[in-house]
Every structure is written in structure tokens, then in C-alpha cells.
Image (tube, rainbow, N blue to C red; front, side, top):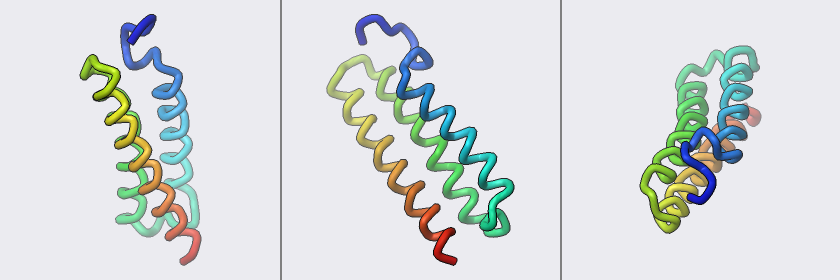
Amino acid sequence: MSGVSNFTDLLIWQKARQWSKVIFQHTKHSLFSSDRRLVVQVNDSSESVMSNIAEGFGRGTQGEFLVFLGYAIASLRGRGQGILAACSV
């Protein structure tokens, strides 16, 4: 990846980290915080987004990075599903 030496320099990873912090705060204090299983699933998918970005970056090729960005997107969709489920209860 040109101009970037560490995954923490990637704006996409930084945004994922910020969003993960927000998600963790909301799951502590929101209406669905009593559903421990759902909280764990939402928080895990939040961490998964950052992990997939980091792992893809570490693979060293643009093709593999794109594959792992796809995994990150899938984790985002999983998180969205968890949040929708919580809101419909």
C-alpha cells in the first residue's frame, strides 16, 4: 500500500475504531444492554471490522486487501442486523 506503512494509518481503520468505541458505549447504556448475547454479537462484529482491515493490510497485496475489506463489510452488515433486531424488540 503506497504511502502507508501501518494499518493504523489507514483512515478506514481509524473510522472503524471510532465507530467501535461508539458501539461499545451504546451497548453498555442502551435499551438492549440487558440482552447480553446480543451485546456480545454487536461488539464482536465491531471488533471484527477493524481486525479484517488490519489483516487485509498485512497480507501485502491489493487483491487480498480487497478480499478482507469485503469481510469487514460483511461484519458491518452483521452489526446492522444485530442493531435492527434490538430495536424491534
